[in-house]
Length: 389
Image (cartoon, rainbow, N blue to C red):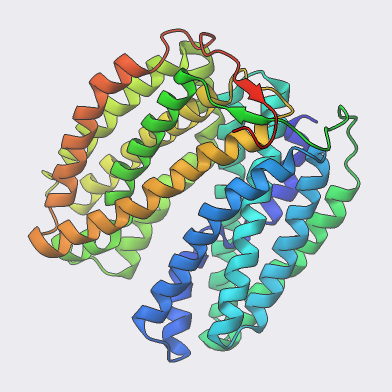
């Protein structure tokens, strides 16, 4: 099934993609919960992602991509309506778990469909990312409209009821999509990653760890350095997301055309230089410009690295393989923010960014040595029977 057929339902279930991380701490505070209880919600989401990616990745190989895709929409519907009713921590935790499962199933099914096509992998991954960002921007507009007419507690309920309705429509739309797929094995063989794929996995973990150190610190950095208000923070945060919403497919296409390894190296260098320039930005407008360039280079690296890993994996094992790969991503994104926050609080707002530049500089020679020179050089992974991995 070509990914372009999936773009509309993906956009429709992505409405909370951007506003959720902004509203959740405000909503939990309004309900009277502590900062620790809020961070518990964040940790639960990360933990669910970490565990379920391995489990669902293997399970997803037993069923058609279409079935997994449709199942993800049912979980989105359940998650959004649970959020709409959630006025206690228990319901919020339940909704977070459902939302985590939904995101995993969506990613596994879409990545599987893209890998099955085996053409323009990075471009299609970029298009998927753009659709999610664009859906998130529509959600931002919807949230502004609703919250301008309701108090936060009531507005939250109305907002997520609207998101749930949109997800339900997306589910009904997805049911109309038809695709002939090869019959899946009921007991798919376990995938054993080749040496080259394990190197890509390692680069991805390091990249996620280093980059997540500073991405989560954007708002605290802006407040410390520029004493930015909410409007200035919103502009700095949203502009690069808006640009990437329309450029994802083009950024991915660069990897397909130039070679994934070359784009990963170029993006790593660009990211380090750009963040180093951020430290010398005396005005918020200059910072916003460099931050936008950083997000674009970050996206280029992400799409090409993901495509390099997916290349040549058997269609019967893409779920299992990608589950292992994305588990590495989660490990990096759990350790990175904690490390960045420690450096920020202990040594000042500049230190995490210096650590990022140093980390990306050290990553360059490792990337040059570890990643295959030719995008087609990655060997197809060895397969062994379940129970022998």
